[in-house]
Length: 483
Figure 1: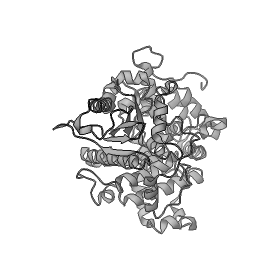
Figure 2 (figure 1 turned 90 degrees about the vertical axis):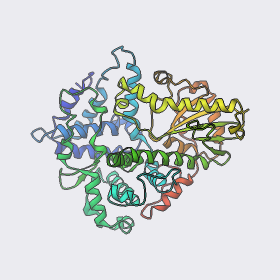
Figure 3 (figure 1 turned 30 degrees about the horizontal axis):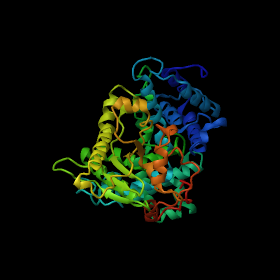
Figure 4 (figure 1 turned 45 degrees about the vertical axis):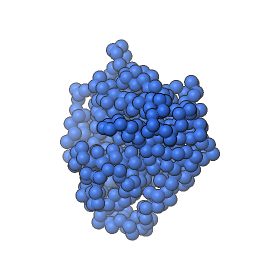
C-alpha cells in the first residue's frame, strides 16, 4: 500500500494499527534523531520530517487504542512513507486554482517547522520585552506575561528551551526528575524548580484525554484533515505513556515559545486587543532589525495627507537603492493552510494590500511629493513585505495572480526569520545583495534567502541583546543558527 497513491483515510488506518503506548515513544526517538533541519532528506531518515511525525503522533494519540499490535522502528518509517504517498485531494482535479492550492498546502505544512531554532528562541524576548511600542498598549503591559503564561516571559522561554534541548539529546524523553541533575544548575538557579514543574504541566503537557478532545482525526473526515490545527502545537509534551514525558517533535516545543505560539495563547485570552499590540510591536521590531544595517539610512512611515494616507512602514536608503518595507503581522488562517478557495480573498486582504501600499509610496516618491523630499528620487526602488510567519511561494507568479498582486515596483515577501539573517550579511552590502537578486531574471519568484546557504554572516545585535538577557542561557555558536 505504501508504494501506491493512498488516501488520508488509508494513512489513518495504517497508523491506527499500532498501540499508542508503543508507537508514540518510537516517534519521539525518531523525532529527536532527525530534528536537525535537512537530516530527513537522505538514507533511513528520508521522509521522517517533523511535519510527518507530528501528524503520525496526532493520529495515534487522538484515534489510536491499546487493543492493537506493538510497533517497531520500521513501522514508524512505513507510516512516514505513507504520509508522503498520500495523494493531494485536489492536485489532479484540473479545477481552477488546484495547483496554486497545492503549493499553499505544501508550504504551510512544511515551512513552520523549518525555522532557525535560534531565531524562534530569542525573538519572543527581543520583540515582546526589548522593543518599545509605538502606540499605547491595550494588553501587553507590565505583568501580562505572568497573567498569560504563569511565569515571566524569560522563564517561559527558558523552560521551553530546556525541554527542547533535553528531548533533543535524550531520544525524545523528558522527566521532571532531571531538574535535580547537576547539568541543569545553570537553569534551575535562575528559574525555580516549582515554577518549571507547574508551567510545564499547565502550558506544555497534554495527556491522552487532552489529545482525544480533538476529534478531527476520526475516519471519513475531510481529506484536508492534516492541514488543520494539530493539538501538539498547543501541548507539545505528551504525558501518560510510560514513566517519562515524551516530546514527539522537538520543533513543536520551539514553536510553542516563539512569537507565533505566544500570539495564539494571547489571542485566545484577550482577542483582537492582543493581536493589535503584537502588530505594533512587530512593526517596531522590524525597524530595530533594519536599523542595524550599517551602510543605510532608515526612515519611519510618512503621513503625506490627513487621515489614513501613509507610506509604507519603513524606507531604507542606500547610495544605490531605496527599499520600501511594509510590515504585516497577520497570521495565516485554516483556509490558507488548506489551500481552500477562500484562501485567495484572505491572502489578498492580508498581503495584497501591502503591494498596494508599496505602489502608492513609489508613486509619491516618483512625483516628488514634498513629504518625501528626503528620499532620493533617482535611485532604483524595490519593495519588501515582511511577515511574522513564513508565507511560502507568495512570490510565485501563479500565487500573485490569484491574489491580484501586480506591484508597480519589483517586490518580494520575506518572513522576519529571513530578515534576521539578511541584516547579518558580513562582507557585502545588503543593498547590493538585494539589487543583484532582484535584477537576476533567473531568480524570479525565488525566496530572498535562496542564496544565503554558504554566505558568511556576522552577529545580530538584536539577537545578542536578547540572549544576554537570558541569565539561564548557554551561548549559541556564532553564525550557526543553533542554540
